Image 1: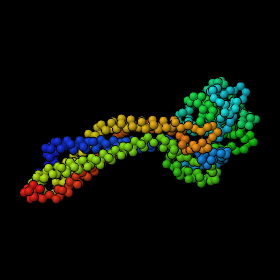
Image 2: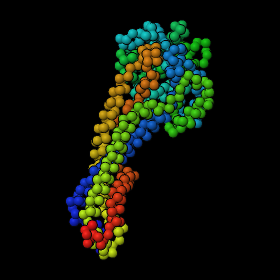
Image 3: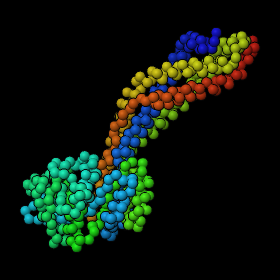
Image 4: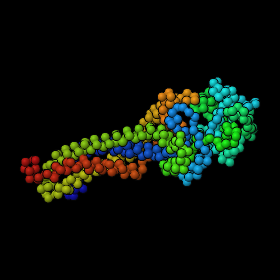
Length: 457
């Protein structure tokens, strides 16, 4: 009788031991497959997150280098434009900001807040391309009417206003608004190019400029610069955004941008959005590490249990092996029979595990991720910005602790069993099975048919 047929008969004859071994392997398969599926799902989610925000590189003032005092540095737009011409860049925009005052009959929305910029004063941000503003790209802001500001409008006097401000002053696309610069002397007539919607309450201060979101104004770089620098000098840029063609080009882009700009980048940082990605994927990494630990712990414990079961089986079958060896059976065939029995049970357990593990893993993984994401979001919401006009360094606040905008922690994953995942689980299961038979195999090699049949040893 060949060892394959003997393996089948042995499994059938020893149903109790077969069921115990099968149950052990089923638990191992469930935990290993769950770990593999969660790791695969989190890897896909992290890759999507990196591609969604990783293609954006921000040029911003280095608050840490300012030391909490002094005037914020500015950069010449020509330098930013040279960086924007690098081959890694798909689109780019840059911005500046200053205080503007609404003149004549125009009035700000009364949000019940202290007027930090004086009567009629609010914050105005000049943009090269408003469609690249993070809030517009994320869908947080919605363009209700009109169109975005583009590079073609650079030196024209055009603005975007929030719909509550437009409603209060009965302004529509195409109307004109008179704005006065921070010097309270220079004025200019600006055309309303579009009206947008900001979902934040009017009473919730805009964290950076501490004005009501309903009163924020976005305008062309050249138009607002004319109010800030009436002499016609080049506007001072305080922020820029570069959208890359490929997210994997971040490091190369930063190196080339630093080489292109040289000392002009002193006082600025090139943020490749690692912070945003880390903030979004923090919960993913947490459940992935937990799943990996549980997977290896279960695998090693299962291998130990299986090794004990196989070793016990060898002791119980010494007489059987002694008879077979006395009949001329090779020891390697006995070892192969053991491995075959384990492999058959493992294959059946893996097949059964594939039927319901993905759904079970989806439910369990989603529950774990939901709790981690909620805790992470609670920590983000608990962060409080420094007082208006302060960087926070003087109060002991680290600017790097500021949460990244529009980077909510990922709270959903999609679990799917791919052929590669099944192959990984099969390989791990086979490895555990072979490991479980390796140690007992040594005792089989030491078996002596004469001593077994005469002394029972």
